[in-house]
Structure formats: C-alpha cells, structure tokens
Image (cartoon, rainbow, N blue to C red):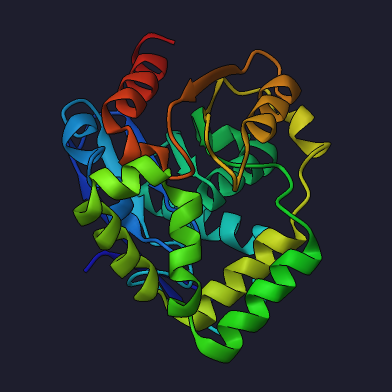
Length: 260
C-alpha cells in the first residue's frame, strides 16, 4: 500500500494513469475517502497521472487524537507532493479538500499549477454548530449524523432516484473513524480564510452546487470574487457535486485543466 509517514501518522494514497503525465491530485471531503472520486479517475487517468489520497482521519490514513488544524491538513498534502518528486501538481479538492487547496494556494503556491476548489467555503458555519456536531459524534459516533449529512450531500430528487449511490456514500461516511472525523471537524471549525485567499494568484476554478446547503452558492461566489481571475461554474447539484453530476463536473474540470 502506498503511504507516507507524516510525523508518525500514515497518509494513504493511490496513483493511476501515465507516470510521465501532468499530476492531478484529488482531495476528499469530510466524512468520505478517496473513493468519492471513483467517477473521476477513469476519465482523468487517460491524460493525467491521478493521485488521490485519504485525508488524515479518513479511509486508510491514520486517525490520531485531535484536534487537527488546516495547517496540519495542508502539510499532509504537501508531504505527498514532495514525496512524488514533481515540480507542480494540479489540485482538485471538494469541501474540506477545497479548504486544503486554499491553504496550499496561499502557503505553497510554487507546488500548484492549477487549482480547482469545489463545493467549499473560506469560512464554514459557526463554531457553535461545529461544536454541536463534534459533541454528538464524540458521544454517539458518526452513524448518528449520517442521514443528516446525506440531506446536505444530495438533493431530495437525487436521493430518491439514485438510492444505490446514496447507500454507497452513506457506508463511506459511517466507516469514517470518529476520532478522525472530530479532528477534521475541529480543523474546519477553526479555519477562516476569507481575507487570506485574496493572496492566491493561481489559475483557479471554483465549482458550486446550486442546491448546496452546506457550502452554498454564495460561498462559492465569494471565493471566485476574492481570487483574481477565478472562474465560477455552477452545477445542478447539492454538496457532493462530483458524485451527483459526474459528467458535468468532469467536463468543467477537464476543460479548465486542458484548455485553461
């Protein structure tokens, strides 16, 4: 299993596609793992060396006691990039993965070629809302909030028409280590990049879901307005837009990466 050690914590990743092709790195959302990108890999691995990884606390990566910070999550990603030995990568992150991407765009822009920030926010909810979620997971585990999360991840219509996909995503969430979930929740709770993202000078694509109640269209518009030259694409989806609208998502990202 490919993994690296970051200060004693294993961070798991997978590589697919041509070895010498430009690297495209995918970063998962809170409560998922690298398999949230299963609809993207077959498309992008034709022309890119695709690297996807499990954020700390998720999937096959380690889940040490938290709280974590966005600096810590960013350093995990940076450690993978350095391990790959490449000059630059394209970055595509959704929700928490997009927040990690914003951190990289600010703190390690020399390693990033193009930046895709999907269904994300520079500041997410209130500390009180996150503390309530953290307390709930600490007391009862991740499964107790899974059905609530699904109403944020997918529209009512999608949940009704695609039950197998929704069930797969629910299984992914309930398999998340509660210690890791809480640690990452603290990182998102404590993050505020609303002013700092104005420093980002990288070519940036912002993807927002028209029906996303978690990181709203307004959040996406704010990011796009704050990063000079950023392009905004709005998809007919809720929060996990790459799963709900894979073709539209893939077209938007591929067009941005291959054509600019």
